[in-house]
Amino acid sequence: MGEPVQINAFAEQTGQGKAPYALYTDPGLENYVTISASGTTRGLFQVGTQLYAVVNEGLYSVSLAGVATLIGTVLGNNPVITAVNKKAGTPQTAIVADSTVY
Image 1: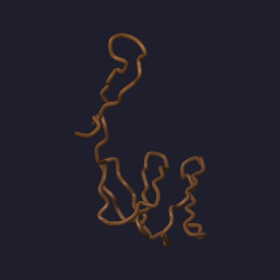
Image 2: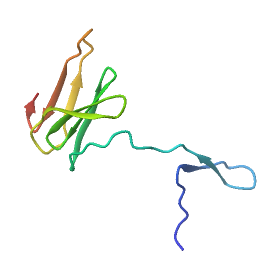
Image 3: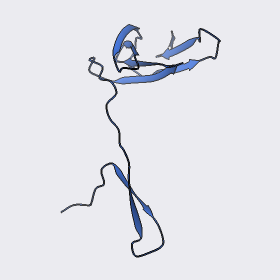
Image 4: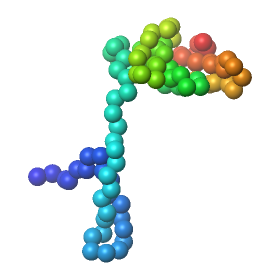
């Protein structure tokens, strides 16, 4: 028999009462989107209410309904670095991947 495991719960030391720990429930996580490209998620970033994902060499737009649409290519294998400015109306985004700026 192994160590006890809590799923969707966490223990917190109370330092009082009969039990030294209290167990609190947590709602956990659920899948929001599955992108059909198998491989590595190199980065996620948000512009306004829009979520973007770089998976392998694909750039995907992810809708609020959790639908991923391939919108471009980001060459390379390493994690990407992103920056988004606060330009009114049309924010600008930079993606840096393997020394290339998109």
